[in-house]
Image 1 (cartoon, rainbow, N blue to C red):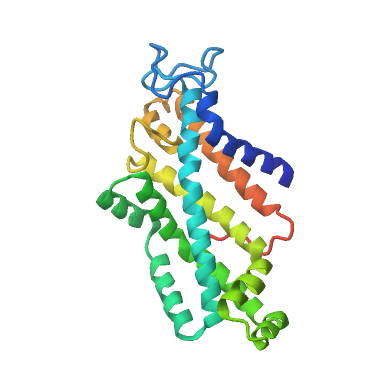
Image 2: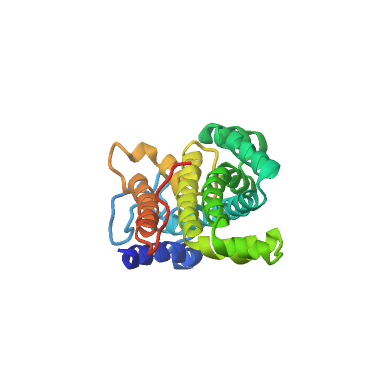
Length: 264
């Protein structure tokens, strides 16, 4: 299962990189007079509400769906892990201050917070990446801190303290190498949550803006074709489902996985 889902995830990431080069038509080219056309040999995924080739649109959209979620997940997981280790190693006032700050952030409703920020600052890619990273850093922090606190009580960390190693050396040399699997698992979860958040923002019209579009935006653009079962609205929704389910299954089947799925 891990190999199969890993292959699907790798294919999705490959589409984000090479999709535009594989697309049979330019992203915004109107290729048919028939809107919401069904699947055919000429248009395997049909056409959208303007008569554009949906296969090309999906291939172009992968770079935004994955290309925005990936750096946001890296920032969230990286910042949360570093802050969690810092809180566990230093303890005391630093631990209390970081934990209360993260508790404040995690108490904010995710979608409402992102809507307010994007509405105030605009929906540029930079704003979307930073907003998603800030929203999901607290969840990563809580998991990293819990693991780091357990590791801080082990004999090899106590021995490192006795040798006079500093906090940074203990964090990077002793604790981090022993929490790689939980960190990777949490990174996968952050990625899934961010994909769904960005797709929701795009569906509400506050995500990637035209002429560019991600998979969530394509669902919104073609929502009128839902009653007719048009592939233009179904295909991007299925693409989001395949990506998120595959990442979740890959996480569940990672060898040595130490934490389960969480929604924080």
